[in-house]
Image (cartoon, rainbow, N blue to C red; front, side, top):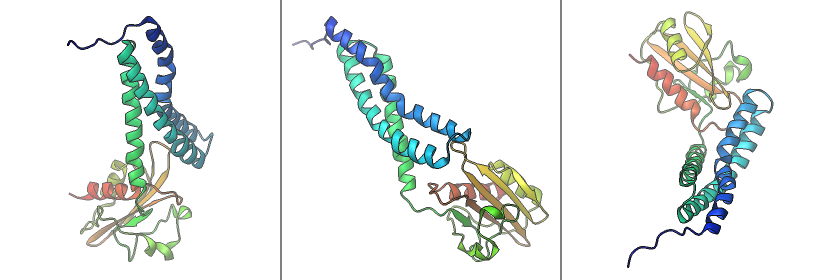
Length: 233
């Protein structure tokens, strides 16, 4: 027997058309809320705890699953009533990508990543210009190692170290003959990370530390690895 064509019942089409707008709106609500939270934090209207922890990781994350359900309903309604198929498909894709992005970030945050990493944990480079944000020189041995970042077994020029920091997204705040320091602000919520490169005969060490004690999902390690990669010939 031939396949049954989707229903063209006018009442069903009108119902689907009326439902489509709120369903599509629900599907994109989570990413829009994340963008609003980022904007509010960057403008200084709310603090990081409210914008990141509450609006993003609680409210928007819950909305992402609601949006995915709404996207599925919109897609089914569009296919069965032959109305607004493209908006429904776009909403479903956006909702699915949002849920996937939250899941990916959650997998990063499930691991206990260090917030202070150095290529020399026994004698970690100390912060001078940025000491007010971190422990004093006597406590630098608390810095952890990062498997993706290693010391450079040679004495590099301060200019080379400064270029490596800038290329990794750390504008230089202090440069001396044997030590260069920089500060990086994360693109989304503007969280700050401090970096120092210490230059000695036969060895160049790196240290990166996040400000505050909020988990960073491994960002500190990734930034240290990026600096190390920039320093290697």
